[in-house]
Image (cartoon, rainbow, N blue to C red; front, top):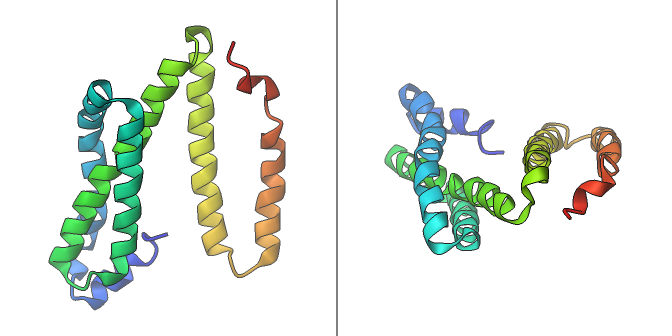
Length: 156
């Protein structure tokens, strides 16, 4: 939800020349944090890494309206991006731990599907939010996914 509004806001702050860098810092630091968070998940456990990433991401999301300088956005995007690498890495490791080897590919595929559907729904909800019909359409499209593979929940 931040990306559509961020470029215009950064321009208003006088940061038109830095928009690309500030926006891409999030992705770059998320990428850099993945190996680090994976090693940490092996050391202290999957759940603490997942919780840490989610809590820091939540706090960072609350700070965006309060940041009024370009330096603040640089720092916030660095921290937010770095913490964003923690949760998906911890979740993937956790799934690999709890799902039997012969069902692991399916579980990882479902994780990818849920992630993609979540991003698609969030974006359509945001950009079509003014229209109740768009929301209903998105929900109707998702209904078949609920029964996609009922046996997928039984990992024995």
